[in-house]
Image 1 (cartoon, rainbow, N blue to C red):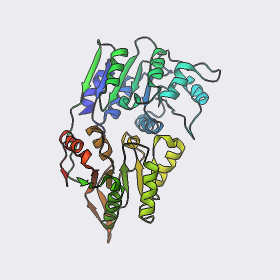
Image 2: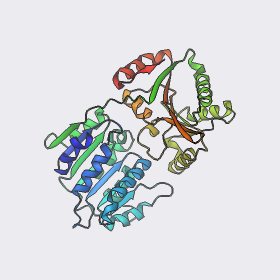
Image 3: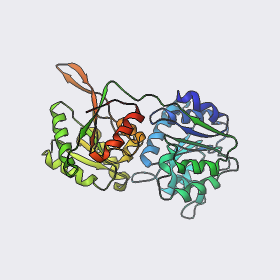
Image 4: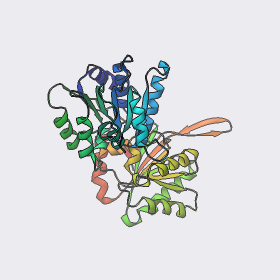
Length: 369
């Protein structure tokens, strides 16, 4: 459905503002449109695609490379994301000067390469850039340097460059940006219809927390109960990063290591986050305690059969974004594969009950008690 609504306006060259539900395929649609617009006869960069985080940029670039594989290298791409283990800004500038058709990256590094230059090196050539696309732009505007970096990048582009914005939500910041840089004419505003997210293989439920200061014990009881039912890994979401470390330590110690926990948040840095992803995917870590960074598109992380909302999300979109991390649970018994339903559980205090009711109505899921 997303491709039906979005690809044609982008290919036709319209500035496009695309609102589509999380995991609706809007990123894939964007990449298809970018590839269709790529001119192989021009050996210069023609499109820039920006993602909110290094992890998202890396995954997006991997998807793009898989889509260009049939061209046998005729469509050249480059990743500008930096971070531990990544390329330096100078390396990225040199790579960009070789003229990759499509460059994927994060806002800061793309500015270094295409807007300002770095270390005595002039910025890379942008003379043939025809499109700048911001994927999951609602997350980009949350960064503190957004108001300086984005205008600087756009001003460095050729006059009339096509702007494409995708977002699962249309916040005032997103709309302010589009009004300022896209204008009101020649803008296609595309709203992809919301698809009912309910999944009969996933059970949504709540646990009423009687005493908020003992909520962590309700979490421990839930985890131990689920362990007895063959749930092997879980993701626990909180609304802030302030209590992540404490909560992870408490889970590990209170379960005697049965549920070995680790944290995943922006402040830990890309190198540490990559290690956490590796440990979780290998099964070394059983519980991942995280904030909304993981709910916003980190596709390298495996899905699990148990997702816990330690705090009720502040918006229905956040609830669905987090809950998409849940999948059915399967085990092999006597050579036969048996699958049971996955669980999404919310720990709800009295103060959070109203928000939980709003989420249930807006998200369109049945939530059991």
